[in-house]
Image (cartoon, helix red, strand yellow):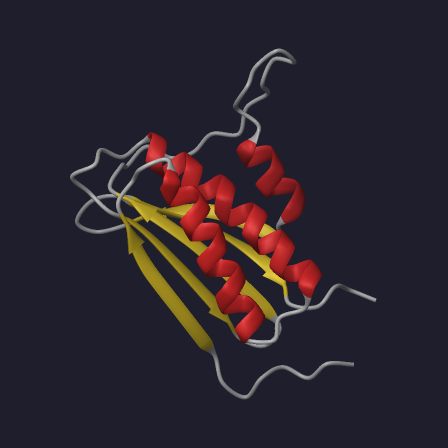
Length: 137
């Protein structure tokens, strides 16, 4: 059984909200988690969740504001947070079969151990998700 780390590791980066931001955020999160020794399955799940949350954030953000990606690893759980200046909370809906978008939060819900959103002061919100560092046996 893997023992949790004695210390918590954290990383964050601020991004200008352009379509290329999603690719860059995924790549950075993948590199950071691999560097921390996070198992591949957890890295893959975290990268998928990051992609969906950043995609949602840049849809609701103008280019004058930044999107923040923050990742924490306490040795047992990864916490993924994406913050943007919009107060609009994400809503889990059902996308029509022919829709080309609208399934991101369903993917997050199905992939994460838990997820939610909270307001940020003075403006904005943070959408977060947790991923077990190691899968349950």
